[in-house]
Image (cartoon, rainbow, N blue to C red; front, top):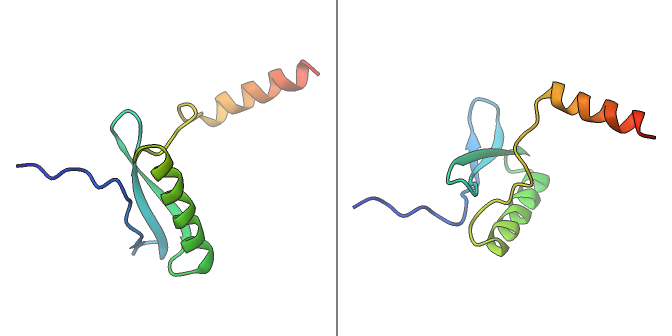
Length: 85
């Protein structure tokens, strides 16, 4: 029997970078690692608690506004924005 996914992410150490990391579920069912800052720092723990609250209010899913942009897509959007003003 497969394990059910954990709705609450786990605060853990990413050994290669020394950062705190947690894995969240996205609306499409995939997972994404979010880096929170230096492991065991007050800032990384505060960010983790903010993420847990955000995920709890969204039914265990990390909300995403839109797909990630590439740098070139962001530059094109910025250029259009500048030209329109």
